[in-house]
Length: 347
Image (cartoon, rainbow, N blue to C red):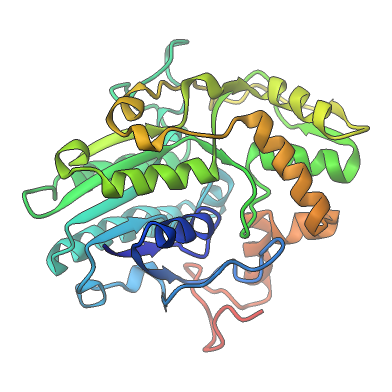
């Protein structure tokens, strides 16, 4: 197929694009390149790409594509708190606008990168599946719910959306993120000797490797239409639900001379949930995760050693919100997180 990957220069996109190309698909990227230059190790391979803001996409840009894999978003809760209006503008309105433009252009498949964070703070200790009530606690999670709802209304015989509810990602990517829990814990252990927990360690998180997220997208793309049409799938594996304290202990065992430390004032996180992944296991067997958190911790530790990592680099290049705040303070980004000059995201 000829596929458009939005956010191809991001954490997941940098892993997904090579996988799609290896499977024989023709890939075009679309990215505003907010995080260009934030690579760890060799920069990601860059396919043919549209360098543009998601909010400016029209049906004309989407002519000739068989599918859109929509990853582009402000990608976590702290970024959502930077300015909730940015999250709704980009994650919600632009995502729905993209779906409408895709339908107008005759694009048949629309794979949306949703999130298990929409389960938020469920009123149950049981594993939640795709039928569970939503309980969002952040603008990021709310935006995902609203996109699913509005895009579902567009589904028909000619336009087939699928919603991949990713769990908390981890693992090495050329476009490394340091603001997700496993990557962050391993980095702190490697750089400071402290596996720093910022909550009380009790919250539950389902965890999935970035490569396994990418395989789920490929499996959904290649699945028969009737299997994935207007369906939501939790992406992960049921035996990879962990409390943060347990993950921290695993990190301390992998990274030499490190110990678990709790930040002063850490409190229970309202975002605590365990997720069931039976649906995707049954419907898309090719998507089954191959990674475990244990293997991912070992991979990250090896990558931090291999490519080098300093505390200054980690805090200023790989923590998304700090990078964006720097671009804003330098005047390179303006209102709405739009580039202020024709230079775009150089450097």
